[in-house]
Length: 393
Image 1 (cartoon, rainbow, N blue to C red):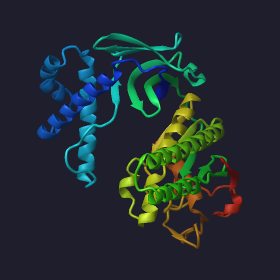
Image 2 (image 1 turned 90 degrees about the vertical axis):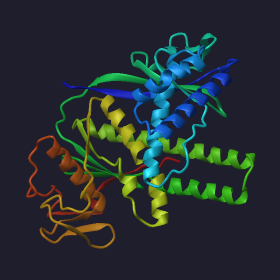
Image 3 (image 1 turned 135 degrees about the vertical axis):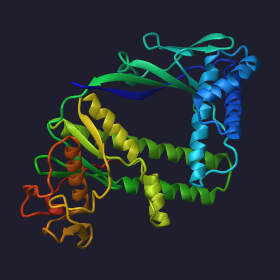
Image 4 (image 1 turned 30 degrees about the vertical axis):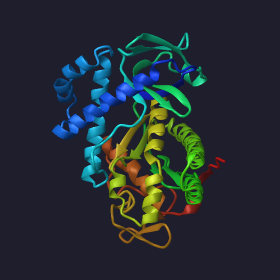
């Protein structure tokens, strides 16, 4: 059976902030900004070239700093500059990029994690620091995982080390796939047995509620510490509530997929660039964290040995899954095929076509003339969908 690598990030909060750490953050930020300026002025997008052209001078200037800080700073600067160039091409960035955060990238030469003794050792200009962290049950599952790179992060809540763990997981051969159509307010699943499951998420209401709340704060308080604290407070509440929702959704989806061994999702990586709706709709869709939900579904499925594939999203809601004909709106969210008479809800069509595309990717012959699902004469109404109302208060 094939193996796939899963990567997850775990957060460790330090119990105490040692002296000298502020200086390390400041020095690292200086180095990254120097490298960004160099990349900007010389149009350098290659990590190897940036390191080759700057390393010797930086090594002389920061001789007491462990050398691998210069390596990771080059990686950070390259990533920031490449992201800036991409945004600039789309007209979303101007001027010269600047790194302002208290974040340090650490490779395996700069830190060592000891889960048993609940400490993290970090190399600094003054030697190795041994830092205690607050333990969590969540950390225990990573005992047999491989430790990768990490980020040392300082914010208003303290200092954290975010560590990337990886593990090789054996993925089974799928018997069939379930197709998953993600929407603002529901997730619709097409099952191989001819049934559909729709989970009502209320995500749109949750996001809209917090968006309105933040707008009221912004109008009432134009500036100041209180404004910042309130915006951070409600922003965190929204993130926590949605994270809880996404994990519960993913658990239910993986549970349904276990008997089939395969999950099909749409490849939505470029969807934000193709959105061209009203200002209100654009705002809603840009706030929708569909990729985060997909990532949670993907890693939870792989941990169970379930195969996850991503299909091209083109025409999943516009072509008939029975004959391949063009679908037309027939009132509300219902779509109709004038060629074969098929009729179904838009979300059902989407999930069905996603599943069929996955089967074709897997080499299964799925002709357009394939028989209709077992619900009857080519019609699937909303009454035929088994709904799981997910209410996460």
